[in-house]
Length: 223
Image (tube, rainbow, N blue to C red; front, side):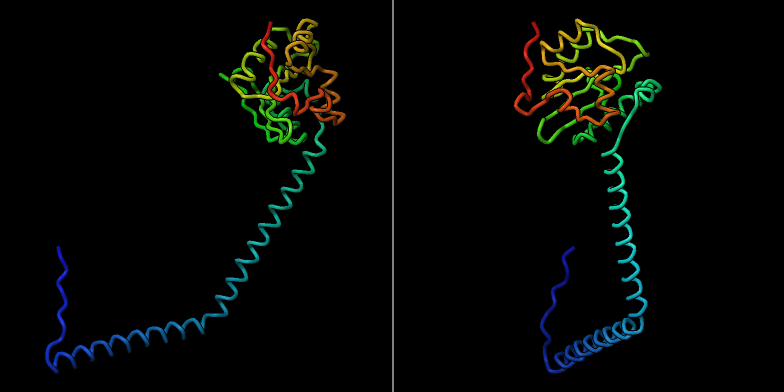
């Protein structure tokens, strides 16, 4: 519905009436403003205390967050796992431990293992080396990982996960054929001995395996 149009006052009486209304509105607004200013003047100590309190809480939370972040960085920087600890883990905890070790090495890493993971249990992104896809194989002590795992990782690391490097990691060992096939086709492997050097002694993965940015993405076709 259209709003009614206001007409200009006609005659002296209407002009005077309109002026009175305007003055009354102005006086009312002025009184309201003065009342608000008076209330604010009385309440300013409380408002000041609230501002100080909010500021103090904000500073405290920032310091808490900073302290927690620093402690987490220190924890990750000194993160170590022994072979005995690895042997006692289940598959899920083993994958989480490998993720944390990648973070220690400077990666942004996440665990993705589970149904339909397409031969990738952990994915790490390194600022210089690119994406590292890890297939974790937790076994009983003395267990061996065969060539079929290497084939699966080779088939998905580049095409599916856009990886620069593919690594199979076990707390056990690899068969000779698996290690040889991996060396030929750029699928890196970390067995029990290398795992001890990486996780317990603190060697970085890229140093342990000789990974470099220059080799990123060079997955050769399997013969």
